[in-house]
Image (cartoon, rainbow, N blue to C red; front, side, top):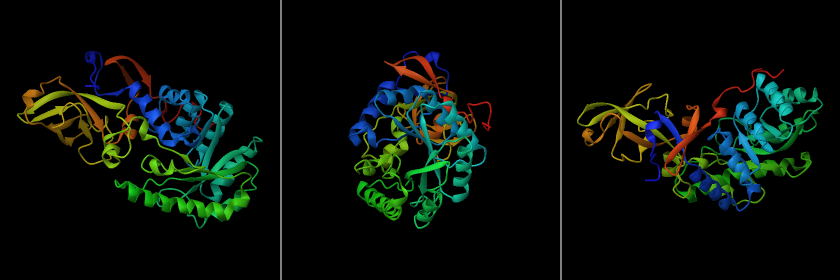
Amino acid sequence: MWFTVNNVETVDSPALLAYPDRIAQNIRTVKQMTGSTAKLRIHVKTNKTPEVCQMMLDAGIVKYKCATIAEAEMLGQIVAPDVLLAYQPVGPKIYRLAHIVKAYPQTNYSCLVDNLHIAREVSDCFAKQNKRMDVFIDLNVGMNRTGILPSDAPHLIREISNMKGIRVKGIHAYDGHIHDTDLTLRTQKADEAFSLVEQVVANTQDFFIQSPVLILGGSPTFPVHCQRENVECSPGTFIFWDWGYRQMFPDQPFEYAAILLSRVISVIDRHTVCIDLGHKSIAAENPLPRIYFLNAPDAKPFAQSEEHLTVQVPDSSQYPVGSVLYGVPVHICPTVALYDRLHIVIGHHCAETWEITARKRNIFQDLTGK
């Protein structure tokens, strides 16, 4: 079995295992699906790890997207050429962003804005330093989480186009509300979201110095948007993949590249065991089961607490205390954020670890960057 670790006795559990050969395959696949690295702006919120991002850099992917200041700094540390903070900076985040822009001059940073007030604050901050920050207008195309409504976007673009400290570079639209398993239906909804972007561009073309850069979607709609010309796509989960997306999007040919290792810590009765995989070890935002075990497909988690996961099995005698289970999380992205490091498995041997640097809230000691 591809996931087993021969020296598993050296790996304490719970642990997050990563398989570089499978990561590399997923990188090759995402490049093949687009046909050009120019169409890729990879979201690093899934992996948060310098070595994984370096693998993408080595593969010729130069544009990235992130959700936190720490992720943005991690990308600066490996000299990623182009980084979008896909999160409107508010309060101290504006000054922290300015700090990393100064600290990593070889990286071209940009950020999102969706309202006049924050655009003005960002502009004032960078104008004081005689700099201009590239910004993307965050467009709400149905996710209803962040972003300005398409009908209001032209007014915002007109208002901020002459601000001294920012330069409007393009449009960002995340359609994470589109989760249809049927690719035909998913395509239809993604096309509808994209049409909203096209309408905004048509009404604001004169306010862009160059043709606006369009950044669209995430993993669910990636197969649709990657077929468009002059659009940058932002998949992130593909790098490790997970059970949830494998079930929802069977059309996407990515492989599991990061899984959890856990152990049986108690046998309760003939059909029940407990393992060391509680809320603190796997993303708990989904209903149970939150994990599927590759070497115990009949095991069914039914209760969880902070450090424990109780599992129903056909015959507990097959799972004595100390038994090792390998499982794929339903949602890998927030699961990664629960771990300090990846245990790297090469040829069934775990010989090193990679620090998940950007799981931290802060890397700079100065939280404001002032």
